[in-house]
Figure 1 (cartoon, helix red, strand yellow):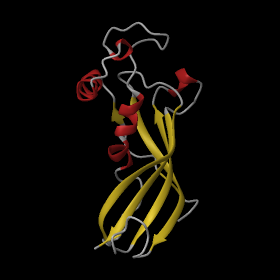
Figure 2: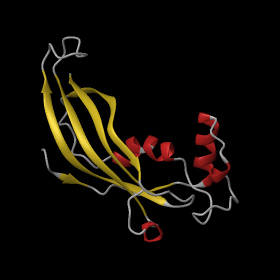
Figure 3: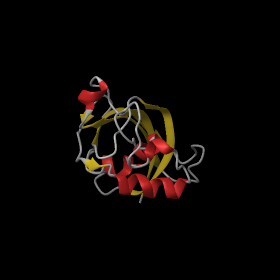
Length: 151
């Protein structure tokens, strides 16, 4: 699977209601995220961390199914996460992915607690439908690390 590209996935709209709900959850009410904000970006922008938190939804259906062998998948974090260009409120975002590596985890691997599994690293690019305003740069890039455990 390493080197294979997948996506893009479905568009997800980042509207003001979503931005406001994220601000409430995180208590991050910085003015650049509020409706009517006059910014150098031409209006309010979404939180970068909101874009990152949308990854489960953005990646839904992008990668092929695990053929029923996965009991659970755990988010291990990111090797790299960059907010390359802002996502304007009202924009749509979607994700594409390239598999960096898939590594088998034996029962003795740290953190496995006696279970067989794999560790997958996927390079994800989140694009916004208004990239023409950002010089064609993606909104976000990351290397997402997850672990999958067998049934």
